[in-house]
Length: 219
Length: 370
Image (cartoon, each protein chain N blue to C red):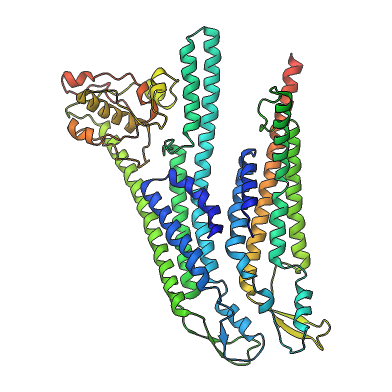
């Protein structure tokens, strides 16, 4: 799986971000994307083959695995990474739209197309809200799907065609749990960064707007 | 190995703005850790669970025994180690880039203001063009190899803290690896965990090969730790030397070639000089070009500059030889210590021969006011 595409995309986003936005991009690269690609993928690689149930009944292992892992952790992790990075593209598109407009009209319409003001500020705020929302949605999804963030080493399965309650053993549960905790921690860190960026921008621009109004009134 | 290119690109930038020891540390990280991990170690640990054999037919016993024996695989542990050990350097890089950006913004604003002032004042067109050219050169200069960041003030503090945190991380991971696995991997692991009905013999796959890599990675971690400590010592020693020479200068000296220090205003100017004709002449890579053909004048300038550096900056860049600021040395020795990486704005000082170089060498009260 080539993540270079996402990496190049996010490098473009970096140009039009605030300082906190750049920290967010660095956290996503280093602690989420890199850890996923270099470490986590390999842990979940043979999870189905290594999933073992204490029964010889054919098909029992398959149904039990499907029952306990409707979507594998690693696939959810990948989806989360993609969904959470995508709202930043809105900002890139808006800047490109601005530059296109300038070209079409052949005159300087904006002081700097990449400057966060006016419509671009709204787009930026919307992208932040979307990012935060998606992070929370995925965290809740993880929690609901797997009954918390724990991975037990033994699960009891009584789905047909298993004739009775069967012991099934998950492979590498401790290692998976360590990386799941890592995922949750980095998710929470990203949520905190997004919320602080949101409040910083709202605060900064409301002060600017208030000062402008004050100066106009005085005039 | 492709996955490490993510980190590699970030660390390339850090490489440009590190001290010599820092560069060696980064090279060690790239070659001996990332490359080895990505190519050799990954394939050695590839079949770690599939070939982990337990002497039992009990279903699930192998799974639980493997999980007990290896709560986290060595390879994943080393991946986390590399990431956590590289992170402080990236924080320093972030701070450096932030500083650069702030400097650029400030200088752009200054240049704009000056240009406007000069427009109103009706000053020469040439100086305006010069200031703009200087601004552009500066802006483009920071991205290139010549745009070296000078380590001083808060940036130096960030650098030192990043090395301290990096050292702490290395120690934590080395200790962690020792606590988890000891140093060597045993071939046989005896497992007692439900559902295994009794203590079971489990056999680790490729233990010797794994031991080779474990010892190698441990040695590289210790080497990195040593390099970090050496860098700390190097920076600390320089700082201490600076402080010593500063306190030495506080007491009057009768050494020959007594220098006149630049007045406070000129020293302050050195940090935020207005754009000047001379700066337009400075090379884009910021290197000092001596206009002097006269060796004595050049030596005098070197010694003068050393005074400025000791009073003004905390020089800990480590690029080039450290400028000796002790005044017992003869001018010949001082010239050997001339650092090539003078700041660009050095030229702004109105350099003239020190009165003392021709007159008596007695200390005067206005010399080197701290």
